[in-house]
Length: 252
Ligand SMILES: NC(=O)c1ccc[n+]([C@@H]2O[C@H](COP(=O)([O-])OP(=O)(O)OC[C@H]3O[C@@H](n4cnc5c(N)ncnc54)[C@H](OP(=O)(O)O)[C@@H]3O)[C@@H](O)[C@H]2O)c1
Image 1 (cartoon, protein in one colour):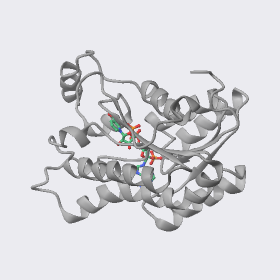
Image 2 (cartoon, helix red, strand yellow):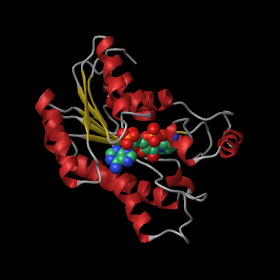
Image 3 (tube, helix red, strand yellow):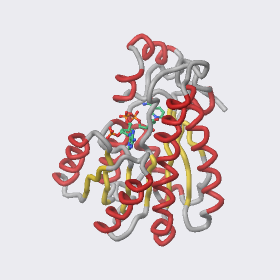
């Protein structure tokens, strides 16, 4: 893809202080976009992303919000528009397993939290961003998970169910927002990020590697590439698509 493929575009990436979101912010900036790097708790990470972009001559802004809050999600979009006056791309990346549990032992509180963090957050930001995205003839990319296909056995059941809801939301939005806004999703397999430092043991990570035909887990940069592709003119005829990035671990 042309390195200037996203030149002049404004992108809002949620969860951009860490992992996949941080790498996506850097890649969009390298391709000419202006970046709003949202974070919740990773202030230092988001500031570091902004500093790197600015050091390379790009433009970026870090904004804090708890996206499980309707008010804060709406304010995030307002503050982004106040700075850059337009929005071309929304990457709904923020999400978390929250806590490993079987569904049998899952409390209602944990179930609700998984849905708040993984799908209600994306709904709230998307709803607030739609007028600006329509005006820009922009696009949305939602970060799902391979667990939508495989289920979340191993303690990620509430997370997988919430990501499944985000998959259906992707398809609904692709129809509702056409022809103004393209809406697509990525479905990463296991990607080496802080997520797994928190939720997966080294033994579990080694097992994931063994189960993957390409013989390794993925990198945040490999996921960022797929997101940047979906945002680019190279994907102009793609909407409602679900892109697998899993090293061959799951075949449709
Ligand atoms: N790593 C994988 O193997 C994998 C596979 C498939 C899908 N994914 C998805 O990829 C996305 C990024 O995950 P990652 O692997 O890069 O892990 P990560 O580094 O843990 O990133 C998760 C991000 O979600 C944000 N977040 C969590 N709760 C939030 C809340 N209440 N409000 C706003 N933001 C919140 C975090 O922000 P703060 O840190 O600022 O609090 C963090 O930046 C997630 O949606 C995850 O489900 C990851």
